[in-house]
Amino acid sequence: MERRSFLQQSTLAGISALTFGGATALAGSAKGAEKDNTAAAGKTFNLDYAPHQGMFKNSGGEDFLDQIRFMHDQGFRSIEDNGMLGRDTAQQNKIGDLLAKLGMRMGVFVIDGGENWKVSLTTGKKEHLDVFLKACERSVELAKRVNAKWATVVPGFFERRTPIGVQTGNVIDALRAGSEILEKGGLTMVLEPLSDTPELFLRTSDQTYEICRAVNSPSCKILFDIYHMQRNEGNIINMINHCWSEIAYVQIGDNPGRNEPGTGEINYRNVFKHLHEKGYKGVMGMEHGNAKPGKEGEAALIKAYRDADNFL
Image (cartoon, rainbow, N blue to C red; front, side, top):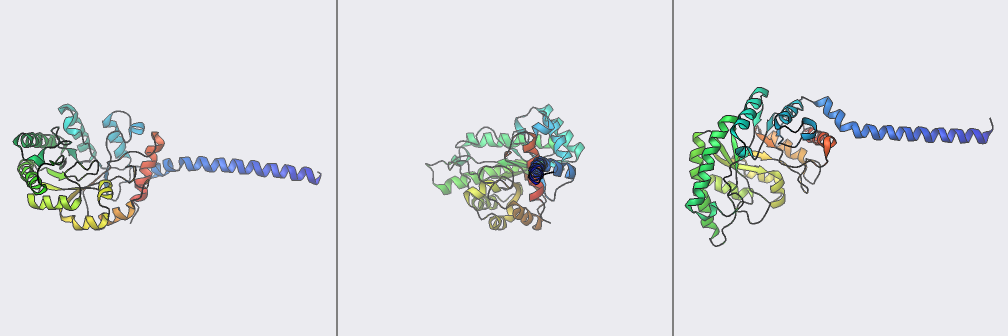
C-alpha cells in the first residue's frame, strides 16, 4: 500500500473512532442521572425530603397516589401538599391510608380560609379572626385523616394605616387563639416568612422568632424556607442558629429560579450537613419547581438531591 493511501485510511479510521467515541460519551452522559437514580432507588436519604404533587408526574403518572408510590420507590419518606385542606374528604382519606401503608410522613399543608394573601390578621378585626379560627378547626380534623403534625400559616398583608407594633400585637393575639385550637389536636402551625411581595407582614426569620416567643405555645413555630430567607436576609446558617429553638420545619428551593439544589447560588450540601449535625429530624419540604422538563428533568432532580445529601 502506498504511504499516501495508508495515511488517508488511518486518518479516516481515527476520525471515525473519535466520532463514535464522542457519541458514546454523550449518550452515556445523558443517561448518567437515570443510571445513578436506578442504582440508588429505594435507598433513603440522610434527611427527610418531601416532594409534592406534580413533581414526578412524568415518571409516576398523573394520579397523585401513583406519584406518592413513585416517590417512595425513589427513597423519599415524606410528602407535603399545600392544598390538602381543599381536597375532598374521600381523597384525604386515600392519601392518609397510603402514607400509613408506605410508612411515610405527611408534611405541611396550608391553613387557609381564603385570607392569606390579603390584609387580615394584622387588622385585629373579629371577622378576620373568625375566618382564621374556623380554618384552624378544619385543619385539626384534616390532620387526623392524614396524620399531619405541621401546617403552614401566613398572617397576610400589612395594614399600613396601623402602627407596626399594633399590627404585631394583633397577629400575636390571633395566633394565640389559633394555637389553643391546634394544641388540642396535636397540630403545630409553622409561620412562614415569605419573599413573594413586600406587602406581606411576615418577612424575616428573626421577626418570626420574636412572634413565636410572644405567642409562647408549642403549636406556634417557624417554617424556615431557605429560598425565601436567602432572598430576604441571607446569612442562612447563622440565622438558622439564631432561631433554632423555634424552627420546626424547613423548606427548600435554590435561588435564583426556585428549583432543586445545585441550580442556583446556595451551597445546599453545607446547609444540609449543618442541619444534620444540629440533629434536625423533621421534614424538608421540596417547595420548588423542576429545572428541566419531562422524565429527564425528574431524574436530574433526584440526582441533585442525592448529590446534595452526600455530606457524610
